[in-house]
Image 1 (cartoon, one colour):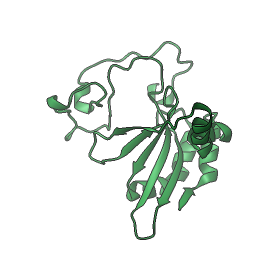
Image 2: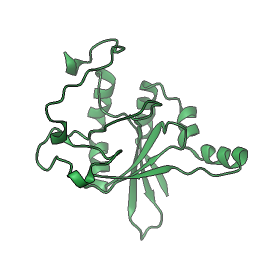
Image 3: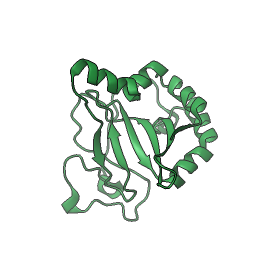
Image 4: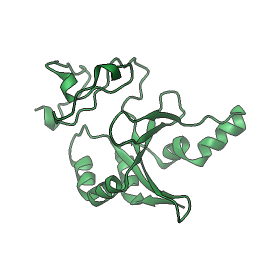
Length: 183
């Protein structure tokens, strides 16, 4: 059984970010899979990446050229936390410039009543770009246990807060106005 949680709220959030229902379904719906199968003769599956964090989440990237969307498996307590705080999240998304990753859908999947429930969150992929990405940081704003072990430092592995060190970053010139958090 597949259940969309708060579908109207997430539809409004998608609209806020200029994502139509047709586009969303094109990338994530069954139509996407059927189109691939019928017109290309093959079935391109979601590209998966493992989590380098403690959560053990799985990340699935849409099969389009730049992986426009990500599907992340999340634990029940994380899904319930998002659901419980959805009103605050919605208000924040609509009232402020934000650097929060847009959550575009929250779903509950039960394969069989006796099996574990799986929750997934659909998000915009912040790394959907034709540009080369040299480093990725998973910043949490904490210092405890937030350093990547030397043996884990490989291309594509997110670095942590303490790896950022004293670096200075420069934002691109094409930012039209400063978001509230940079003022």
